[in-house]
Image (cartoon, rainbow, N blue to C red; front, side, top):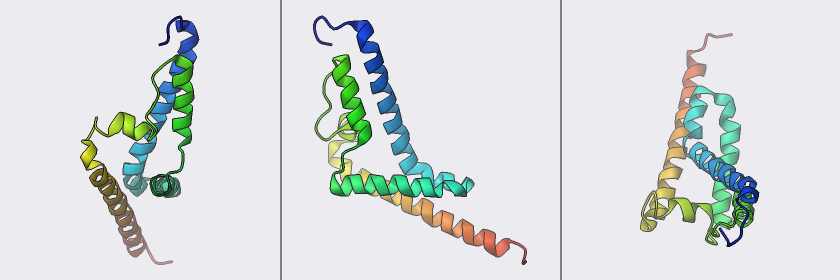
Amino acid sequence: MTAGMNLIGAVPYTFVVAVAVTLHLVFLGYLVVGGFLAWRWPATIGLHIAVVAWGAASLLFGLPCPLTDVERFGRAGAGMGELPPEGFIEHYLTGVWYPADYAVGVQVLVFAAVAVSWTGLILRSRDRRVGSPAQ
């Protein structure tokens, strides 16, 4: 915190940071496991497709993340240090949860998890249709 920062005034901004970080983690978690959740709740596959599309577009085209912008706003208001230009993943995950040299490998594993989950969903959907009584 900056010198003379009113701690009470920083609380709402700190809350904004906490919510943005939590939503980021939920988003990334759903990105990885959402396709598997669709095995149980098939109606959720549309949401998972949208999450994967956003994640892929963000990675491929460097789209700015609105949650990162919200976190930056909260950090500035709370007097916290800035995020690196690369954003959330670089600050909280790369080099913390996995070595920075493994970033591409982690991306491949995430892609593989999505591909396996979607393939499984397709196979399960076919099995349900084949096993359903004829109409």
